[in-house]
Length: 563
Image (cartoon, rainbow, N blue to C red; front, side, top):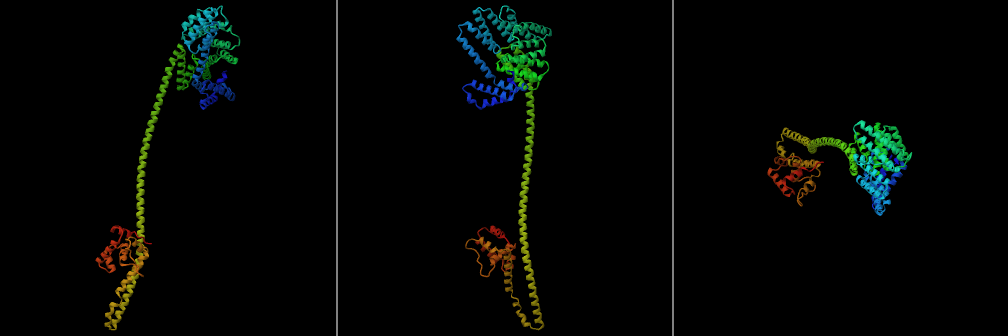
């Protein structure tokens, strides 16, 4: 039976998984659901083995979470016994064993109910006038007082009983309970001398129970182990408890007592791990048997508290207090009452420390967040400046590109017109030399009359016309689309139509000079051989034909691209 608790984490996980996976499957019967889980537990035992060294607190936590189920099974069993009692309430012979069964269910479950059962047993045994049953019922009354911590009342009633003529089962119960009374008195007495006396007295009494027990039975080894433990024979006690387990003939409650006693012995030897393991086994057995009058969970709480697991220690101690209150075990409540505040204080201190850590973390996080915000703001400012600088650089590049294009255009214009200038200058010098030679020849020959024809050679008007043609050619070489682009700026029907062989008209020539950067009207008039007013007239005529305003029209003229 003890192996059921060992290496149980895998099958507990399977049971939990099944429980959550198919809750609707067994909604009509919680019993069926739990039976399926228990079947899974036993089946998984076969797969994962039974090493007793791997019981864990997780196992106990699981069983604690299922405590209500085991209590419910307990109640179901009690209700069945009560139904049988109701069915046989007029038959005292049948009532007595039923009330004994009910007492066994209540004796470590609920003190008040167990006490009521004993009163019923006394009534039924008195009605039967059966001395042995009356004595046995009175012994059970002493047990109720003992379990609830009422030592004086237990001592009074147990010392008043005479079991000389009683049956062996009654004697065994009597000697066992009375020995336990002295053992418990020893445990709660601070005087070493009195403690020793009480234990010796208990050992003397329990011998009377041992001789009556079937040798090698589970109860025999449990009783022998108890005596050896109270005689400080730890090794012998452990052997006896081990022998009890080997009989495999005991209840969950008996197993809980056995493993709890084993854990106590290991704790005396300083073997914390074994003590912890066996207290865990005892606590699980207590849960499965719905035992509320227990010490295992309380002792385990102290161990895990000393190991630093304060949360578990508080949870276990609270559950132990809840169980003790449920049973009405005054001495257990008192024991827990001394320890729980200490653990609760430690837990409170731990929570405060955690709050302090959280406060520090929050403060650090706030500072970090603030630094991040500041860094983000600085980066944002830098990015903004960088973007502004980028825009400035882009604008500068655009201006430089435009300027570079203008310079390239100006260079082309200069190259063309400088070449034109040198060509015209050379041609003019040649004509001037030719004229000079002609005049000198006429003077030397005294042909003065021929000098009157000098105005005809060369012809100025022809020279001007040649100048315009040459200008038009060079300009259209630089701006081949000028005429088309210029006409696009004029209103429909106002476009300038060139005659055959004509390159530029006077209107176009004025704006061609403007496109070359000559804005001064006097310079334009001097070049074209017109008065300034005439130039204004030409400009006004063109402006009236333009689609856009005067300024926009000028800008569009300057935007006409060269090659």
